[in-house]
Image (cartoon, rainbow, N blue to C red):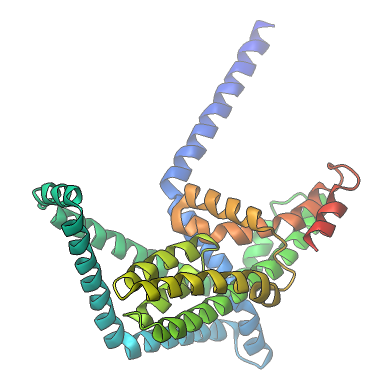
Length: 339
C-alpha cells in the first residue's frame, strides 16, 4: 500500500515537472512557434498556385522557389517605386504630429510642464532608438525565416504530413485527414480574402484622403491596408492615425475622415467580406473580437493575425470530433446559426 502511494506521488511529480517544462519551453520558443504557424498559413495560401505550375510540367521545387521569389520581387518593386513618395510623406506626418504636439503643449500648461520634465531625461532616447533598431532587425529576421520555411513547406509538405501522420493512432487518421482538408480550405479563403480586402481598403482610403486633402494620403492608405489585416482592432488603429493627421488640416477634414472610416468599415464588414470570404469563415463579430483579443494577449501582433483562421477552424473540429460528445442538436444548431 505504501509502495503504491509512493509510486503515484512520483508519477504526479513527474507530470508537474513535464507541465513546468512545457510552460518554460513555450515561453522560450513562442516566437518561433508563431513563425512556423505563419509559414504554414502562407504555404497553404500559395499551394494552389504551385500546384498549377506543377500540373504544367514545372518541378515542384522550381515552382515553389520561383513563385515566392516572384512575389518578393513584386513587393520590392512596389516599395522601390514609391519609396521617395513614402519617405517624403512619412516626414510630413512626423512634422504635422510635432506641430500638433506643440499646439497642445501651448494650449494646456500642465502638459507643457510634464513634457518639459520628461525632456530632462532625454538621455534615454538613444537607448530607446537602439531597442527599436534591435526589435526591427529581429522582426526582419523572423520574416525571412518564415519565408524560407514557407518554401520548404511548399516543396516537402506531403512527406512531412505523412511523417507526422505516423504518430496518429490508425483509428483517428481518417478524421485527422478530413480536419486538415477542411482547415486548408478555410485558411486559404481567409488569407486570399484578407489580401483582397486590404488592397481594397488601401485604395478606398487613398481616394477618400486625397479628396479630403489630408496630408500623406499614400502612407495613411498603406497603414490602413496593413492594419486591415487585423480585424476590428486594425480599423480603430488606422482611424486614430488618420484622424490625428486630419485634425491638423481642419475640423471638416476630421469629420470627413471619421465618417468615411465608419461607413467603409460597415460596408466592408457586411457587404464586401461575406462575398470575398465566402462561407468559409462562419464567425460572429463577437467571436472575431474575442479571438483577436485572446491572440494578441497570448502572442502579440502575430497572435492577433493567427487567431482568426485558427478560430475559424473550430466548426470543422466540432463537426468531425465533438459531435458524439455534445448534445444531439448542438452541431446542427450552430451550423444553422452560422448560415
